[in-house]
Image (tube, rainbow, N blue to C red; front, side, top):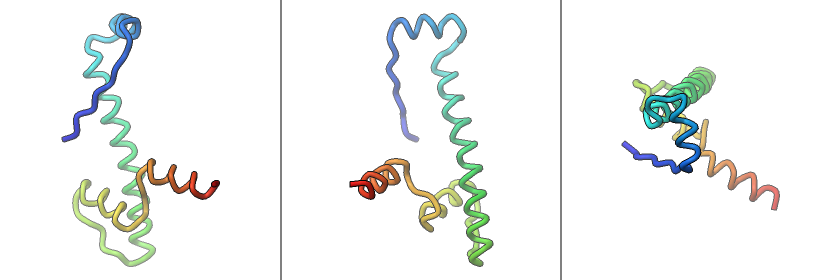
Amino acid sequence: MPDITITISETEKLELDHVLLDISEWATNAVTNFARKTGEDIIKKLIEHCNANDIAIAVGRGAQIQQAYDLGIIDTAANAQAALEAEHS
């Protein structure tokens, strides 16, 4: 499992301490919920693509997300940004 680290200033920590019991737990919940919602969108796109093209859909959430990448339905944001920059150069 990837480990993601963020750095905040002492002032930002004090600000967050005022409203959060556990900053790390809040950050983890925010990221995992965003990932879950993004995954739902990806799986919706995968199902639409597979149904339109008579492709068997992989079983399991992780396999479905990977299948969406493998089929080129989605790509990383970094790759999309690089393609956009190359298109405009």
